[in-house]
Image (cartoon, rainbow, N blue to C red; front, top):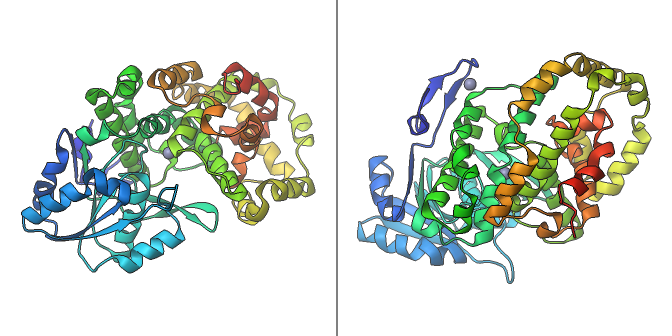
Length: 453
Ligand SMILES: [Zn+2]
Ligand SMILES: [Zn+2]
């Protein structure tokens, strides 16, 4: 078994048949880590001319200190500081990427100072210029630092595009423990989705033949006892607890790089969160942090799995189930009314898995026949929803629908429609196709306390 840090900068032949390559070559996670940035650049033989990219917030946290530090070591340092709009934060959208593109000087290296948005903007800019970048993290708020994926909003639609991960990550614990608490607990919410997202990945392999490799899952599973085992430490900002959380998030990103997709870290629970984001954008509302939403949607998805696995699927009458499926006209109307101007793009995604009654019946028949094996395999990945809730609660993270600023009805609708916006097969599809999602949704919202006032 390869140790996690031996994966950095490595390329290896895997039993899944692929060669996995990890472009992230160095992770420095410790107190005072920012002071080691010059040494890291030197060690990786990176250029001595670079541009720091920050927003006005993160520039205050570390930007000016890094400028002094690097200039003092004879680095030629330029900088672009993106201003936050009044009352808001910098967004990873088209106008911001254009602005960065036009202001960015011609340098051979970029250094991002920030979390999700600044990292994504820098990752994309570096990829477009075909130059490396390094990220200096300011909050353990999500798992995207080390991934190759950029999350962008283009004309209201949440999209992801492929780019390249940073060559190095510098995560200063002194800074991370001081990050806003809702960003720290967002990171926890993003990482507790692992049992559900990995179960969904396995499910997609069994049901729709998706590529699967157990290496990415083994990697993050190693860190699971650390982030699940000390939620009070996270709540108290204990450096050891924050270090464990950050490490898990960084390696979760690397697990996606190994998988070549976000599958090991993003299942149905992420689709519900993306749906909440898109509905908020459609309505011109603000939405909560990605990870705060994902923690809450994970509780729903974990409880859904538990109920589905308790069903006596082999005894199901498939003709009756398929006979009750929504007609295509009705589905069209429902897509239009829920997704509004996004209905066309959603319809296109859905077309990858929506099928005629015949095809749907065949798929359900195969699942019904193999149910014993499918259920046994899936169970191995899952954790009880109550255990996930306790961890989130003890850390002071969001655990109820009201915590993430939407109504129970908005959340319920998002759950029912989330499967429509991505082609990925998840527990939302499985339960929808067997008519179990509609059957259990209200029971879950009550049982888990998600809908509590
Ligand atoms: Zn593999
Ligand atoms: Zn996520």
